[in-house]
Length: 87
Image (cartoon, rainbow, N blue to C red; front, side):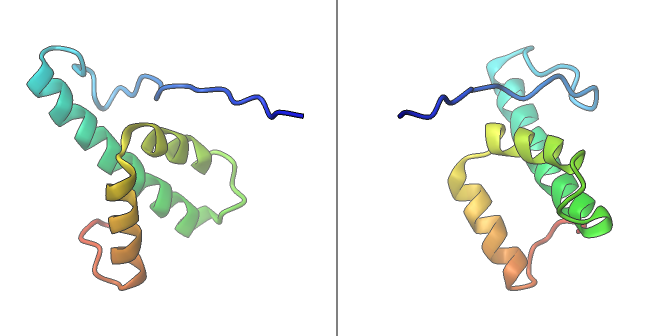
């Protein structure tokens, strides 16, 4: 039996209103959206716990937008207490 997979993109976030203006701006805004969502997710689970369902919104966004290599690097940095973000 095969498992059905649903692919979705990140929903609209009013903090990043001009995502599609130009390719250069789009990349910059997408990168920013990726980073902020990663930070927001980890701040949310730190405050509310991993079982708090609304935190998964941020996880869904950063897993959709961020390259896996970035997420792996940030996870390593967090584990080694050298992540530069406000967690």
